[in-house]
Image 1 (cartoon, rainbow, N blue to C red):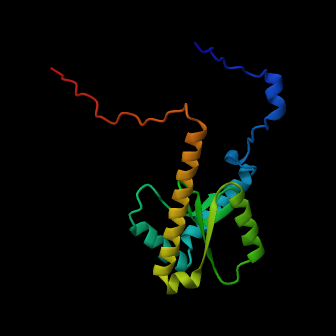
Image 2: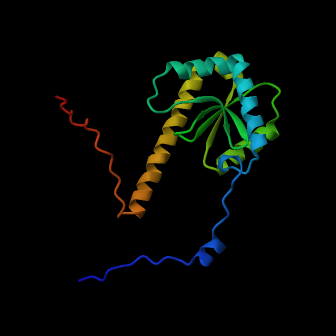
Image 3: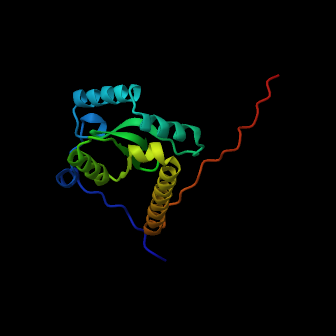
Length: 179
């Protein structure tokens, strides 16, 4: 027979040394509540006063049936406001308008990619002139994100063979007879 394995826990003093402290600011990000509230207010204002390119792309996404993948307009992600964000995919779409600061955009893209969010940049002129081409490019990006997520899930399942994931039983509850 094989020996039983027991779980060995570290003492609290050992775990306190090698684990980072919890961030209590900005809903998990290192952002003050005041700054986060200002970002949400700015995003709300941006939703009210969107550019024509943003309005037309958002309309296409609203009309499309994409299942569980929903894009949110002018979403706050960390300390950035992205034009369209799909949380389930980890995909952010940024619309490049004329006169935009490129250095700031690249720095924002790097910070989003550092936390695992893929950034797709689309020129506003392309949206207004070649909508079908832009939608094809975004569809390819969405498929790549889905494939990446599936690959990560397979790798996790292979690395952890003793974990079993089962979906809850979705059968309707039996009806109760009230007499």
